[in-house]
Amino acid sequence: MVSFFPLAPPLITALMGAAVGSFLNVVTWRLPRQESILWPSSHCPRCGTTLAWWDNVPVLSWLLLRGRCRYCKAPISSRYPLVESACALLWLITLLAQPAAMGPAPDPLLLMLAGWTLVSWMIPLVLIDLDSLWLPEPLCRWGLVTGLVVTALLGFQQVRRSVVRCCFPICWRRRWGSWGSSSAAPWPPAPSANRPSDWAMPSWPP
Ligand SMILES: [Zn+2]
Image (cartoon, rainbow, N blue to C red; front, side, top):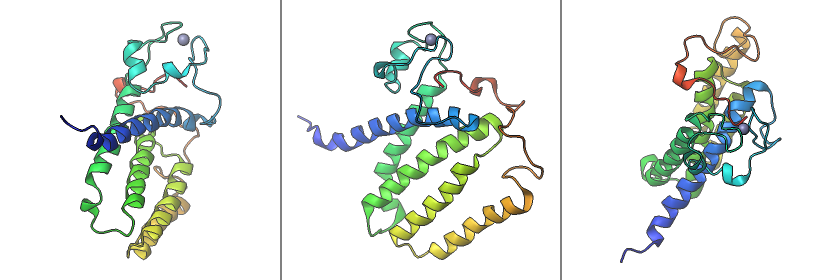
């Protein structure tokens, strides 16, 4: 009989990753619109109904609802369960890959938390960039700070190198005024015209 215990850490990690992925869907939708990422709770933009927790279970709710709002049957983009699944997978890879892939570290748990933070931080950056060819400055700025703090806490020797690398985008921002363009970009940015249609900004939940 196979013991459940060895499967518990990866299972719990995948569930936590999927839950974080669900939150990152909200971040990806609300941050470019200057909306709070904490309030109000998720609701259907068509009928306005606040979603119950059982309508927000990562991946499972989308499958059970067959990709539609329970109340008004508005379609729910398949990007939501895909992002939740991808986040769960990345968290799982981080769990299974560390710490051997990174070499000896003073604190393997902190290293794993840093890995989870990194992959979680990258997901909204990638998605918002895909949607609008734009990187939100708060995510970039606090990403730099978090990276430096974690590097220092881990006691790695490359803290000085990390500081130099952080200075590059800051100098870029000061010199050219934006992350991705030589001219001041409108904010919030207009959706990209060449964006693939199947990755169009989903409209549910906000
Ligand atoms: Zn609805």
